[in-house]
Image (cartoon, rainbow, N blue to C red; front, side, top):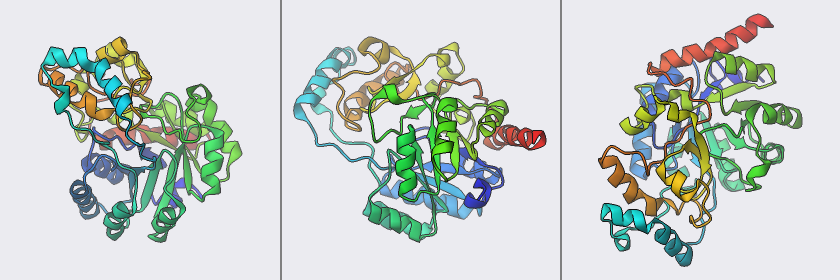
Length: 352
């Protein structure tokens, strides 16, 4: 079955869910343009999640995707947390922040029975997961709503694992992608590969539709992914400057500069490797620092530094998520960008 029929969309384009830089407005605009808009849900409170789902269901009859994390929360490690705050102590002193007053907390929660209770009445057409899948009972519950299920794979082994558990489609996330890596079977970053190396391998390994993600920023990239066997394409970074995105002014300003060409995987902001634009914190502590607590516990200690720096107009301590190819970022409405990306599918159809 073609991805269009599977997901009830006109074109096999998915707007990547991007926590912290978007809400339902971006998802609605993309869905209305004939692609699949996505809502990132892992950082939303129950009230905020309900409000966003209500907005989506009331504003569009088109299909949309809701995205959740499927990680296992780690046990807090007091010694590691203390070591992490010691690493950050010079910055606390610079901003006059008392580390003893910083609350701890995960910031990002995995999909759970309580979240399923909240989401089920809305029966979202598509549900996607990052970092694997929830347990079998929860997954069966989602499928019982009639939702199509997608999840990210960063290796062939992860793709086979997902296919064996009945996902409807697999997002092949290349190393170029912005934001958090979706790996879940192996945390060794040396086994990760680029999109156009990973994509054809996963296409050969599984029998479900494969969606290419990472470094695709324009119609040419879309056409190239389809030529390599993708059933569809997922694009995130290119949407960051759209007016419907909630990307902060500081983040937007950096995306407009040459600095956006220099990205790296970092665990400083959450505890898990995620691709963002290199800034002061990444340069001075090293983008991957062994002192950072496990995902998502690293977030709390950096949050007050981010707030203090941003109040001064600085992104030195902010997670400036961005893929390796920011060339597609354009300050145009999301529907217009979506139509520009769709031209890649049209070229492919004409060529065939």
